[in-house]
Image (cartoon, rainbow, N blue to C red; front, side):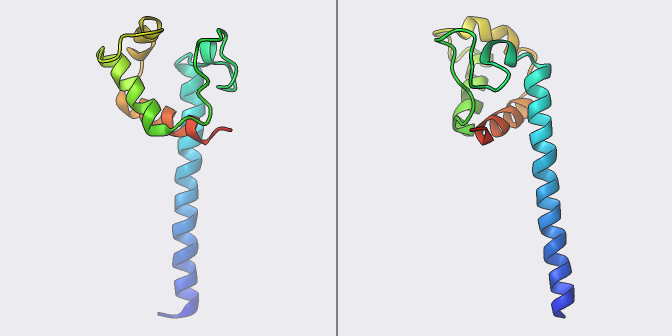
Length: 107
């Protein structure tokens, strides 16, 4: 394979990966607003309205995803989960993953 052809393939792969990340990040930001997460956790995901609400920005994505799933299913029912249970009824698992992945990228 020629160097030019190899270079073109590499550029295409990188561009595809970057486009996927951008779409996912945009989806995460849009979901964060649409599902009203910001109203309790802050527009920046760092400024919750109550001191005992968690800061979501920069948390581990898998941890957040699992917490959302557990709150929705009722497996987790402590702390502020009663307030979150209603909100989680608006979010499906794909959206939970997008939200968790996006929030994990915030600093």
